[in-house]
Length: 397
Image (cartoon, rainbow, N blue to C red):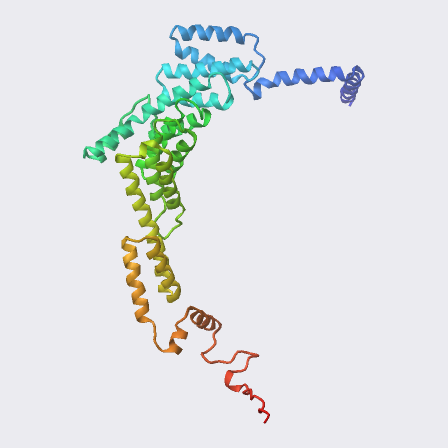
């Protein structure tokens, strides 16, 4: 008991001494505790030898000792207590070390990490340029596949050969997807750079080849809008028109993309000299015909829907719209035939003609939903036969 009492007394005296020493002493103790535990929960620490380590790593990098230099650059870049300029340079040189070792997947990941950590740094343009070169190199396999398909080669064997050939300079899985991801990062981090338009074009082209027309339209349209001086803009315009027209999903879906495609055709005719004559002018003419044909099919199917739901008046009106909007097309001729059939099937008797109207059809369907029989008197409404006739007053002599 005496030992326990003595220990408690010592702790109380120690606490009183600390409190009497003032806040400064408490802050010093807190700072020392924080410094002692910082290394356990974070890689950042105050390194007085950071400049010497950086100089030594750069010397090894210049001596082509890329592997050992890379590890030192990684350590310096991960220490957030080092100067920001030093961290950015170390991260960039780490990526460069990976690139010199031909470990391109690690290099691209490190370049991107640097862009995330230092989005407006001094090495941004160089990193984007190197990322584009690597991504373009990865897309060589896709370009070879496109060429092989055009030459009529066996595509199955071509794909299997690419899948099972190991190359440390390329990603093991989803090589094409990693290339597109790198190209997109190039454009996002250097939207006005010298490789931004090329990155957008290849992202759109690969998606176009794979049949992803919605994604292809996004990339091509972005290139057309933000890179008006790019030499790739005319070709991107052609592929964007095709992508928009193919991304509608068919005549039964929303026709907004067809309208955008037609608008882009008119924009190309009015503001792009490359489309004023030659093959590109003929291309726009063919695309206009294809777009108008799809729009005519959509309106024709709308008229068919009204006819199938027994609304001949609405169907007749929509068929007339098809005839006036799209003259000379096959849908105009089909609309004329359907209009003649509707007129031929229309009853000549006045009573039946009245029942044939769209309003009477809607009333009958409404009564059927309520479960009323034909001729049944509605509550609160007298039948016409039960009302007393109005007799005019006798004329005065």
